Length: 338
Ligand SMILES: Nc1ncnc2c1ncn2[C@@H]1O[C@H](COP(=O)(O)OP(=O)(O)OP(=O)(O)O)[C@@H](O)[C@H]1O
Ligand SMILES: [Mg+2]
Image (cartoon, rainbow, N blue to C red; front, side, top):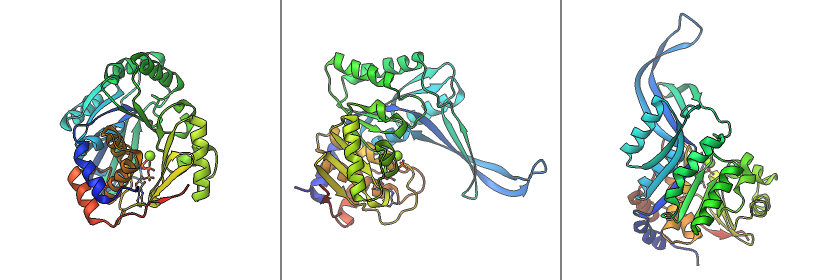
């Protein structure tokens, strides 16, 4: 009944070329690196002499990057500004061979987070963003961009980083288009608690422990509390399923209100948990796109997350690394919580 590593290994080749539509808040993460050997004569601050610049995809872009790393075929839909950063973002997407259709806002910038690092020590982060809710023209442009892709996708990820794309009006527009086309894709949401009212009728949310408590308006510290909070979210959103990620405690999969599985983490060394949630939703989506059930898909996602937390930055996992991990790591003791 509980999938074994050999069963999961057999799923990995099936992930290849599976299509996932990723819609959400796209961002650019820029790292400026150099050394800081003197203080500024202008103010009591260090002077960082920039020697290198690295640009990586953030937000929904990092979800797409995880899908492509696993051999899947993401299409990324989001909004950028009318600025040079948008061109940089498109160039990085092209480099990764990620299909994209980015709408352009006439009035807000591309979301960009710039970190200044001296000898690996972060000195400063600069955020350039306007996270106010999308105006009607921005929302309609996004809906028009995603509409042609709906019929060809069985799985959609909504990656909500609270930068403005998610709203009740957006979701009404999405549900209306799905109904009109007569398609019923699986809709997975990486949620933000402030937007919980928007997620009614989706297939599954992937909140972390803190977000689970906030979405439910209940404590979510121990097993009993997580069960209660998870059930409250299922009731609140009328979603059939829920996946709460629990950091060092792995994840809890609510197949339904009374069928709940706990999957402990397989991570051995933990260096950087950044982006682990993106890895989870990307792997889960591909498993479901390959026709797998929720439990094996989540178990694979848990392995992928266990791999990326051992690396610096928002890392990704490849099919080969996933297969190797299944072979090498002890089998996690999956148990039924309810
Ligand atoms: N400290 C940790 N030790 C072991 N495994 C971890 C740890 N943190 C995360 N993981 C693994 O990564 C998965 C997702 O992590 P987490 O619950 O932190 O998601 P998240 O908060 O949404 O992440 P983020 O938003 O930073 O991408 C967990 O289910 C677990 O498998
Ligand atoms: Mg997260």
